[in-house]
Image 1 (cartoon, rainbow, N blue to C red):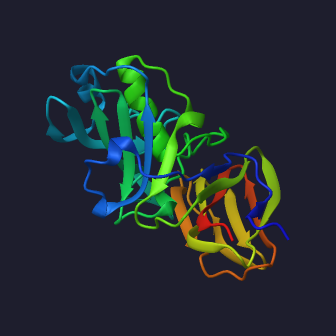
Image 2 (cartoon, rainbow, N blue to C red; image 1 turned 45 degrees about the vertical axis):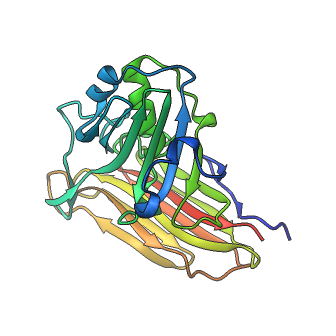
Length: 279
């Protein structure tokens, strides 16, 4: 048996976690879960970069630090002014932001560093890329935050050159994210994964975002034989527009796990996110 995670997926891939970042050496990493870092290859004008932040925590002559709010109702993660601000569940808006806050530090020497803190977990790393469309998620929330800064300052962005590291779990050497999207009038599809016994999993989640418009529309997510999400609209207005997660850290190893997703006249995106150490 291969000593890695075996998975049948469509979007995103396994990411090798590397050593600590040069850009992270002067950052207090005691409250960092997963960090992404990227160098644009040239100096960054901080007066331009600061305009890309939603919240500023600190600004010096060497760097700017704050938060970018990555919205899941926009294909670029931006607040276009016409978005769903709060998740909608069971026909009612909640007080849950339909967004992920990413902490970012931009340095004048060209480094851009983005991270999830310890109050967040791996369920916050998938960027759903406009959850009410059939777009395949193609980057992480950390990567999307870095892209937003590079776009603001006019620098190139190559997501394959973004490096990741977990300060919370420094022995982790792989980050795997992937899944499926179903949309259209009616659709059902399954994908599977297997975690070998030699693998140490630090965090693992089954995730999904769902858009269920109104009467007779529905969405379902099943893990093996058990439904972990099953909702059908009973209102004439938007019923569900939200993201969910299900912890899979304690699922049996050496056993193939199957996730089945099904919908009618809705949009359902599903993923698994696993932070692990190979055996």
